[in-house]
Image (cartoon, rainbow, N blue to C red; front, side, top):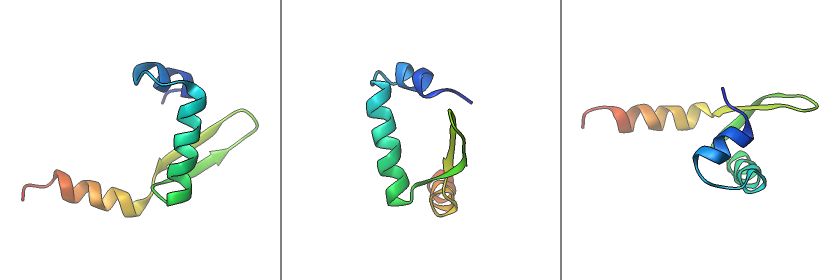
Length: 60
């Protein structure tokens, strides 16, 4: 697990912009919110995208 700030630092993007991109991915259905608290939000890939990832990782 990592915080928004840690992830943003690793990919060289501002935390505010990362939050904006996460919200866009949430609207598109690529990720889903697992838990939403006062100061924390946990995301995961949606099952639909996980299946696609497994397909892309398999030997074609």
